[in-house]
Image 1 (cartoon, rainbow, N blue to C red):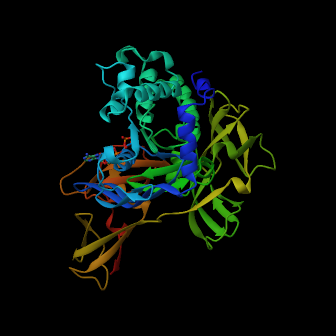
Image 2 (cartoon, helix red, strand yellow):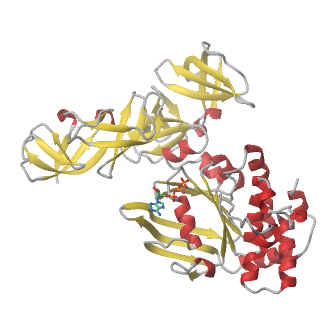
Image 3 (cartoon, rainbow, N blue to C red):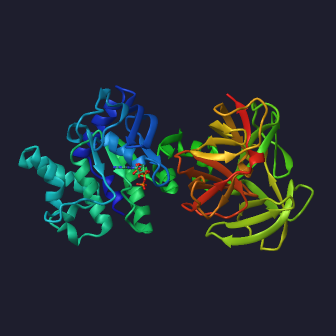
Amino acid sequence: MFYKVFCKYNDYFSIFAAYNKKNMQQSNYIIEVQNVSKYFGEKVALDNINLNVKKGEFVTILGPSGCGKTTLLRLIAGFQTASEGVIRISGKEITQTPPHLRPVNTVFQKYALFPHLNVFDNIAFGLKLKKTPKQVIEKKVKAALKMVGMTDYEDRDVDSLSGGQQQRVAIARAIVNEPEVLLLDEPLAALDLKMRKDMQMELKEMHQKLGITFVYVTHDQEEALTLSDTIVVMSEGKIQQIGTPMDIYNEPTNSFVADFIGESNILNGTMIKDEVVSFAGHEFECVDKGFGENAPVDVVIRPEDIYIFDPSDAAQLTGTVSSCIFKGVHFEMLVQTKEGYELMVQDYHAFEAGREVGLLVKPFDIHVMKKERTCNTFEGKMVDDNHVEFLGCSFECLPQKGLQAGDKVEVQIDFNNVVLEDNEEDGRLTGEVKFILYKGNHYHLTVFTDWDEDIFVDTNDVWDDGDRVGITIAPEHIRLNKL
Ligand code: ATP
């Protein structure tokens, strides 16, 4: 293993690491991102981001494609500038500072090595530009090569190296400049699984050895959980949660985070009162308090937290196994409960498809989260007694006393009263299915309308991410309140 080599020497990088560790005591945060937004024309790529990174931390920005993680990294690197807000590094404002004047270096997914230069010259490139003395360059490049486990490769043509070796050279080229912060944009994405796992270990070792701050971007939740001190989960240009891997996994703040990190059962529930929640057709004891009485909530249960056994009096739920798959260490089973819910259960023992089972979940394994919204709410305007305009379209509605043409209204529609169809007619509201959450007995979809606003839909129909849809709402399902 290459990383073993790191542990053996005490040279330039150890001094560098000691210097950085000493610096750690001086200021609390090395990176401060305050109220930062980034717009590309009408598109909001980042929406009021606030993030503080401690010196020496390994922070991972995690989220699905298009959530804005690369844009955030590029703003810190200086390749793009923020539309609003302030970025500081080591207490100094650098929002408009060009990249080469920032104490950061970036490692990209595509290694961006110079094909006409050998390994040594690729790594030495930046130092030569800075007119660093030859002997110093020699010493620094050798130390950087040692750090990435490529000591004997300095004369090699970069084209003759494997993907993993090229990425090591790219990392060496970044750390040779002694940045205070190393920014890594999906650096392992192009490698095969085995190489990725090895490189993850090496990056973690390298981070400890160098003592500098790493900001890492990935869409791979397992990679984020493995590598990070802190994970920043993003979706649609916003930060959803910041926490340690354990916090993020065990206490997700909303159903997006719960769904994105690991496997989850996410169900609609009602908090009956403190420490009693109802879901899947039953009441359960839980440890949560302070939601009030009969409050609608999301309930998250990890599949490994559900006990599965032959039906007995201990069972809180009973059902039938519909599928059982061996996953290498555990079995993953889908259970259809008597009340019509589907739950995923993981266990070291197999319960084959068709078998009747009992299920049990302990109070502290039930995670209760406040619902972000309980119905769709829009601002609208009455067109006439029978029509209201919202989301850029005119919808038929039932006449309502006290409302007349021109009145501004709040429009409410329950999620299960929005109907999706795959034909897009002229004049009708249309959109694209963007996020699908399975809730045990139905799907909760986020549809991004062509009016640039989301509408939320509960349905039993199966749609795919990216499907184009027409959106219909029956007049009797449109509730109107005068504003
Ligand atoms: P991925 O993992 O696919 O790279 P990401 O989370 O890194 O996704 P970004 O690359 O930051 O996402 O993009 C965020 C949003 O901003 C996307 O909708 C993207 O299309 C848009 N965007 C990014 N760069 C530009 C640009 N230069 N011009 C216009 N839109 C852009």
